[in-house]
Image 1 (tube, rainbow, N blue to C red):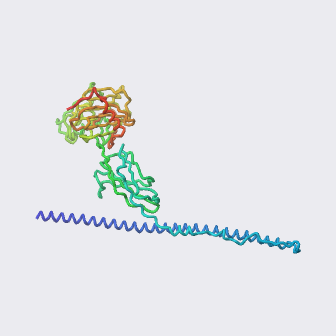
Image 2 (cartoon, rainbow, N blue to C red):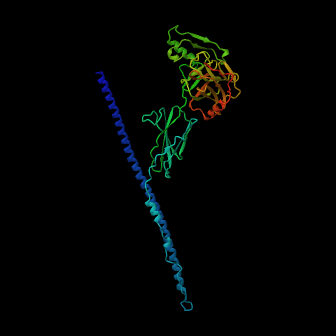
Image 3 (cartoon, rainbow, N blue to C red):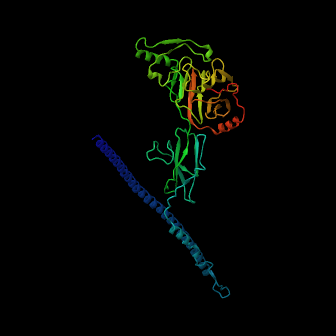
Length: 474
């Protein structure tokens, strides 16, 4: 009986889906029919307007030419009348008798118009043809530096083309666009050339679909066959569930919040039974390199606050990314607030301890900026630091080549190399960030810039810039 009910339910579900498809088909036909009616009315109105314009021009030309003929007629009539008057005044004596011949002819053919060419042109009037579908050339298309250049051509020359329309959308599916894809087409209209560059994109999907069609003054042609280009890049957010309580974390922004930990503790303490939690007062640790005021942290927390791992605590004002790097080459950028006192940017293994600070363990690598009292700029790993004699950039770019065992930091604006770690990564990496008295803004979904790729090629040919800190970590 249950099997029959299940089969019946499947049949009902199938019929419901088919009914939805039929209804969608009917709606599409109805919409198309309304469009045909509206377009035909517009075309007829435009045709009437065009022919009215031609009639108006012909009427103006007729009036102008008629006036010219009348003026010429009047001019010749005046000359003939003058000649007659002169003849009448001439003496009729035989000695003075002269033969007069009018200088004005009656020939008006020089004012005739040959309309044969115009007649042929008018007879050649016809509707503009529908443009053929363009052809996108995937070989000529370029994906680089978070920009996509699309190149297409017409299958045959068409001098009636006025402009092109390009449509694109992001997707996580390879191949042709799906009917029920998760995003709608975005449109770029009035492209005069046969190529277009979309720049400043965030590659938060693995692929992008593209299609293009040609338009003349009257109508748009069919779309080209869609082309799918790979636009894969690392996209991650900050993991709020394990960040330090004194950090206010959003998807791509983290900010120091001196009251955050205390507020969370009070909420938790009110929910827990008396005596179930233990509050420990931690004093400044001058050896940490990150000065901080007195604060409290909780050694026993509820699962809803702890998340998938223990929160960072103590002086480890740390937050990690929520996506692990296990292979490939990746790039992201970080911008610090101008008044940020101390921050670190780098990577770490998943097993980074909740009291650990970035760069002070053999499982983390970072660049550290300290603006407390005096500015220091250093690369850190395994509790060793190497001072960097250069200006701290506004934005730091992080390049991670997991398979090649390379972690490089760049001035994101000028692409100047700041420092490179060379090692062998034996575990998945998580992007890591530390901030105290300030905030960090994160940019992901970025391709490895072309300039960085070129610098990496030249850098790999050298001995490396991190000999004092390079270690093969286990």
